[in-house]
Image 1: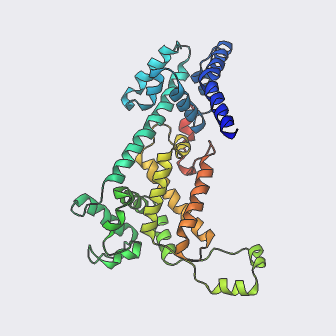
Image 2: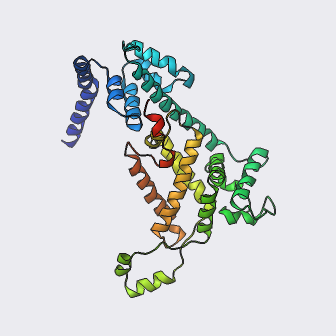
Length: 334
């Protein structure tokens, strides 16, 4: 019986998607005089809410032109918009705003796909100690984080001071390839004050301030233990590579579309991804202090809890993880 009901529901959903929904779209177009793309563009403000609806409409269309429009080359977007307008019999002179809005949406959609390809390429490229460019970036990371401490040798236990596991960092980049180094170096150079502070705190962790309400819940024995326990730090570089993995998976899964479609008025770039990494590093650091783990073995638990919190935030179509990167002014007239 349960199997029969499941099959019946699947048939009903299929019928709705393939038949009833198309009929409804046809009726609404006749009543409003506007196609679905027009209704989305005119009834939604610029940003993730509108772009994601446009993307869904194009993908689900029965038209091959509309289906493939989400994967065209960036240089072909303008012509693709003209072809869509012609297919939908929309006069660009009467509806000039539609073409502008569609082009802005397609730039974001195609840009997101290209960003995935660019990030994936970096992730797949292994660190090569014989490559001068790779070595230069690694040494630059050290200088940015420890400007007053010269690195005594390329192979050195000093690397542990910025959170690598051994005397040669190249072994720690195996999981995320060059992407991990690119992100760490960007964080250390682009937001050097924050990066140095996070590094310092990871080496010399401090407890967060405990509220009076929390104190009241502790027994005397628990409070004494809490007071004597040491706060737990973490390995800065290793956590940075781990947060790179988190950012990568958010990108690949499409979860970051909400953020990027709200902050990038056109195509999201590698810089947008790296800025998002910086934000995640800073937020994870604060979250780690808030969670106050008993030991480093709790890292996976804390990371998973942090991941779920970020995912929940990204479910909001108006969400921009990094408010100071928001391009709302640039999105207004698109």
